[in-house]
Length: 227
Image 1: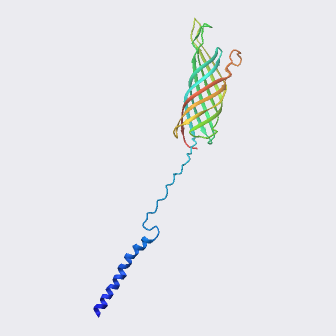
Image 2 (image 1 turned 90 degrees about the horizontal axis):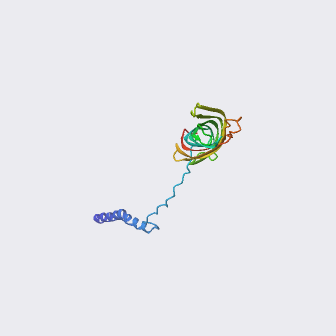
Image 3 (image 1 turned 120 degrees about the vertical axis):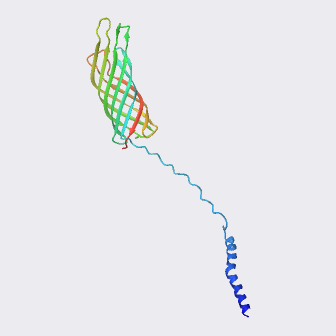
């Protein structure tokens, strides 16, 4: 009798321990979606971050400059250089100082039978600069500059006539604008700068119609600091 009771107890323990282990997987398989891999979420496109352009505190520029000057013998094309520094108060407003030096050796005039001399013009101008679109990859700008201009013409010795130097310093202004291409945060290229100005070096001489000058410049730009 004891043996029978012991065997019955072992059989009951078997059912308690092992039957749930075999039933649970079968029940899990009967459930909807059981055993199936959960689909991965669809990849989301990365959010495109809009590039922001920093307004530099200082801008330095230098390069080549060509000036068309109305000389006594006609229009004189003069080659030279320019250099400028710009301090930005706001993203659209700055103050600029610019120095330009151009020159032309006019050589000898067969019509006048005289040497015309070596002519140089220098301008020292300051004024506001406007950036209508702020500072970005392509940065247009406009400016109005006011200051002084210096004229110098040196004629060498010729046919017993001693050399002579004529100079004149007057008030001057220029107005115009340009376009910069910025290929990094610090460096850029001045694609073009075009200006029209006035410098009347000889107001009492009717033969000198020099009130108007045109200038075109190209160069490099370096920016530093942050506004």
